[in-house]
Image 1 (tube, rainbow, N blue to C red):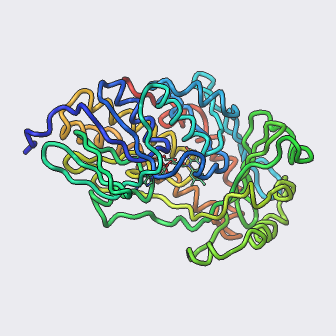
Image 2 (tube, rainbow, N blue to C red):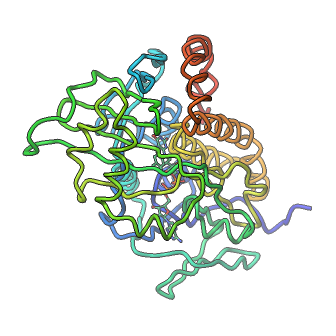
Image 3 (tube, helix red, strand yellow):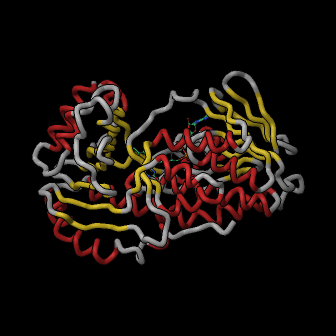
Length: 399
Ligand SMILES: Cc1cc2nc3c(=O)[nH]c(=O)nc-3n(C[C@H](O)[C@H](O)[C@H](O)COP(=O)(O)OP(=O)(O)OC[C@H]3O[C@@H](n4cnc5c(N)ncnc54)[C@H](O)[C@@H]3O)c2cc1C
């Protein structure tokens, strides 16, 4: 039975200032619900990250809260993705649908900064340096507790605190990330005073190479080159990852790409400890059974993390944040949370499953890799068309 105390929300605490958090706060405000954002990190102390591609559907979600233009202006338009084999053969090319917003690539950490700035420009308070630790649902409100022993109270609490969400721990502590079998690296090289670009302007193309031993991606605007690499690593040993030095990682990456065509080694020549984003295991959350409890709900990676192979995590986070706010605008809290989950779950789990299949191709052994390289041109031509991917990229939320 619906709890009669769970009336329409007027105030919200948003935990996390990444993508979903600022977008949720902006959308809640648009819905007439006052929201504050609480972010664990101080400004400028988070990772700048490697290149993050924001898809058309993500930009459509950002448009609802007036954040699309600022992100597009700060990013590099990347309407084309070109897939290569390790021998240099082009396996396929995916072009964006010109009727949709142009895909944009931004440094991962920069996206959060832009969205936080947009929220603050709209009068939303973003409190930095406050780590959420727990919450009490009083039946009439929810009270959040932070690591500095302060508290905050509102009608609802929205956990946008990423894949290792502390808020999700209050809903279902048993759920945790799944390791994909790949570890990720990345960053940006080049720019003024670095002795010239590592690679010439890629003209709006993001190149992806299914190399012999690992996967490499890069794009260049003629000055800076964004890159990332995925190395297969069956068994995850976090202590070993942390203990591996910069020199050891770059040596491993050089060895992994030594026999591949493409500019991976040239780009790695310009990687320094300062512009290198250290190894992190690539993870996802294929199915979080419950997304809310009482006055608390989760959005973005906290509820549905896809591995980076989809290029959709940030876009889905923005979509969910907007959809959750829309439901809270129209419905009492309990029904809003149910409607939100109902509208989002099928879509996000479909994307997560597709990315998991891509991860298998990235970690393919030599025989499977030969099949992949032989079959991919056929499958790309058939299935990577704007029509076939419209369900993903053409998605809009009718605010
Ligand atoms: C290597 C890599 C490459 C990627 N590439 C892409 C890409 O090309 N395209 C794409 O769309 N997606 C990509 N993603 C995924 C994308 O980054 C995420 O899906 C997206 O950032 C999710 O947004 P979010 O707001 O849910 O979580 P996050 O961006 O993780 O933000 C969570 C925020 O919560 C804060 N936080 C955490 N715990 C607490 C706490 N207890 N209290 C307060 N604050 C807290 C964190 O500091 C963080 O700022 C990539 C991910 C990785 C790892």
